Image (cartoon, rainbow, N blue to C red; front, side, top):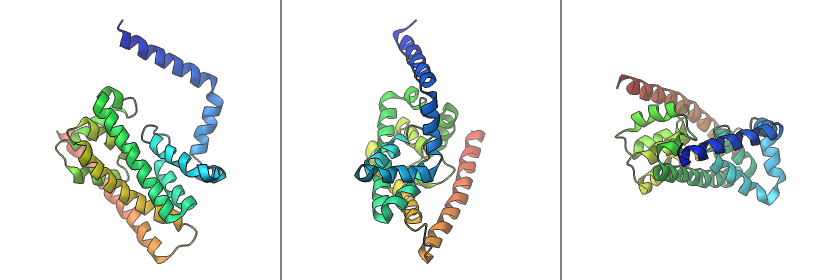
Length: 221
């Protein structure tokens, strides 16, 4: 048996033991993530440390699928207003995406499959083949598209770090702009908010069509 396989087996075994020992706090932690009001209350309770904690959560959600990225994005706007919520969300998501891109580029598909399901990578890797920056900008904005997975897929492809950074900044910027606006104005509903709500609906429909079309194109290849 190779050394690499022994290390993997030991890592899985240690992870299983840790989960078994700490299953109750882990379960409570997962329930906390599913309650956006609890998340907002907790983040506010940390005061000046709140932005740092939220920043870390945004980066981690590029690796941990159970962290509700879009809910946190809206929560960021609720807690810190439009400008603070936008900047915090945008910078942390871009950094998290670039880390995922760099790690998948450096360590390859075996690393990417530790965080993203193999069938998702297969499906979207075929859809992304030969695509340019515009594809990734759209994919990083659209609902119903695995936004975080696209960072890994880009890293496994031929796109340069700088070109993906630009696509990442544009795509995440648009998404952060929308969610920060909704979060900052969730109590009051000015006319501009309705524009963004309609924009969300349009993006949702467009994202569903985009995802279906990409999957259809993949299945016919």
